[in-house]
Image 1 (cartoon, rainbow, N blue to C red):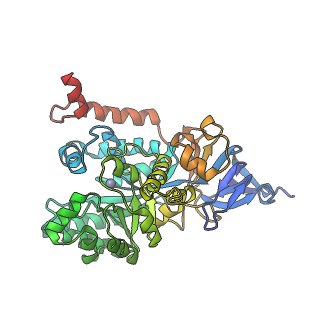
Image 2: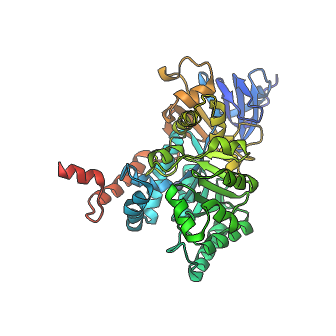
Image 3: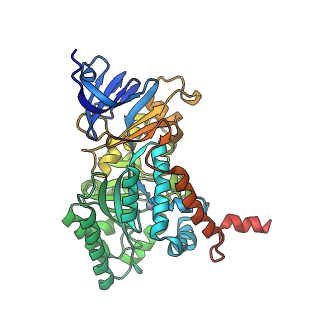
Length: 460
Ligand SMILES: [Zn+2]
């Protein structure tokens, strides 16, 4: 065989490769070539292709599992700065007494940058290569994620002072800000897909929801919203508008195939059919929902009705981490006990939700979520040479039921190696931790903010 040395950026060899393709093909002892950010070939070791190329970088993945980078369909990355600040509280008290006041006092552009950088380090370390975010100063989130080399769907956050009444001046401001934001980001970076994030039906007025939907449609982008997270929300929306939150959004014309509904814990059967009919995508945030005891999404029913469901972590004030591998294990186990059926949410199904189904939920399944020729080289390598991960009979089982985010060894996004053998290459990790610690010091020493743990400590 002629080694004609055609250029290749990276060649990965050895290990077990899960393509997560429609046929769920698994390649033992693979060769995977990357050029110009894309997968040039995925073959087995007998293929003559690898010998034709001269790679600039070789990665030996013997003893490892190679799979598509994970897709986190929902978080608020900068909220890592509030990790563990107020736990064990019901959602509305948690939001109104802690999170909203903290956000009003501390969230600035530097806060958002520091938080996003730490979140990016955490996500890369645990195998996430794409995440969908929604927060304030979202351009800064997008810029920071891009610098770290992460793929992001960046949702510009939108709230109203009073969700019950339309405020024409406020709506005009939202529309103007949304247009400017989308014009800045559409086509600006291969890694950044802009979107609009209306926080919830109980924080955005009907007029705002309709106007933002129109802007999103005019630009062909997604509208993201929390939906039906708590039982309280059902009562609040019913009292204000005489219908459930999902029916409210349908009546406003907000639901279509470019909608991501986050949580969806309290949907009745007819509302599931509404979401299916409009091809609404759902982000399931199992650990956040468990921790805040907000309810549990009828994921099995939704999937049976053909709804696309991806996994999300939610922000780190309510989870409290960005480890999507841990999220997979929790989702698989929780839905089995809810159904009293251990065959529900099997390991392959859950891994699909964290990869290709998550990518589909974000409209990125043509780009990422599986390892196939022509797709972006978003790849993670999990080291199985550990007591916890031996023996290895079934790689799907190992990833969902035994692995943790710490087992991820190497991460490649759009053909760029962002972590190699456990070392981050795009982020100054120590600096990222220090910047967030400085923010935490300010919050701790602020007399205006009562942190439950510190108050308890004082009492002792
Ligand atoms: Zn959220």
